[in-house]
Length: 324
Image (cartoon, rainbow, N blue to C red; front, side, top):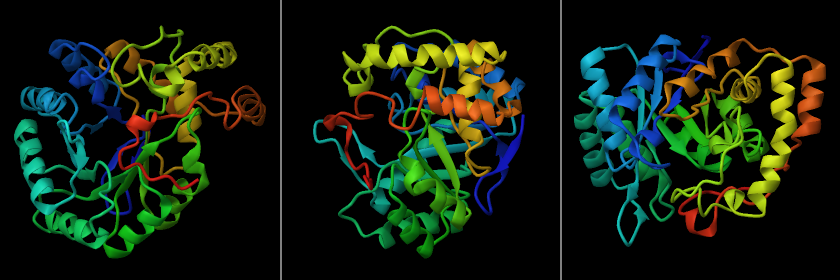
């Protein structure tokens, strides 16, 4: 496993992290034993960076990770998030009271007195950014968090926040089928010494070795890219990429992650799974090196904009900053 720096002043972490959203049952029924086995496999492969959030299963993901941390006592870097207020009036809350309360609850579930990285899961547009960054900087001073991050934000927010207090990491969706960060986020993070953390780098399961059935879970089931006719069209376009990877002795997810890793040494993708066997398919990614011919073939097979359908439906756009 290769290692990369988590922001200008953060720790060295594995070049690939583990996204723990599915531990909370977001994509279907989950099993604690299965999740614990996945975390064990993660450690065996050299991955030491875990990304979770308070709302993943309404605390279930953090609780499972806390159980694992208590029994294994590994040396790992933990990132978590807060901002969503669940319920019928689902909204974003970046207030100091909310962020502090949610962080304390997360720390209790994780069995820790601090986390290395704490994100605002979304930006509350009506609240002054200086107020939010002020809260986060105080949490750093108090030793509750090692650094702060932003999620689903635009380059202008990154620059403004960083001018107030250095940002450790920015987490936006980025993969072979979601390329918007190439229009400013990746470059801004590079220029400012901020780690860019691509989530869903395997296209929410589409970039696996085998085609998936159309998902019926609450998140993907109503997502435009997973709705027909888009879903079938996207599956068909990925057939040739799977063959491309197989011909070179690579798993499809390893090839897709290698593509992300080679966009810059400040990128640390966090693919998600709760299955140990899926995780083991990723490790090869850090060793793959594309030739000029490989790059040309990938661009031919999956050019920017190839995916059909928006990455989010209108009902999924709460507080996501659009900039292109």
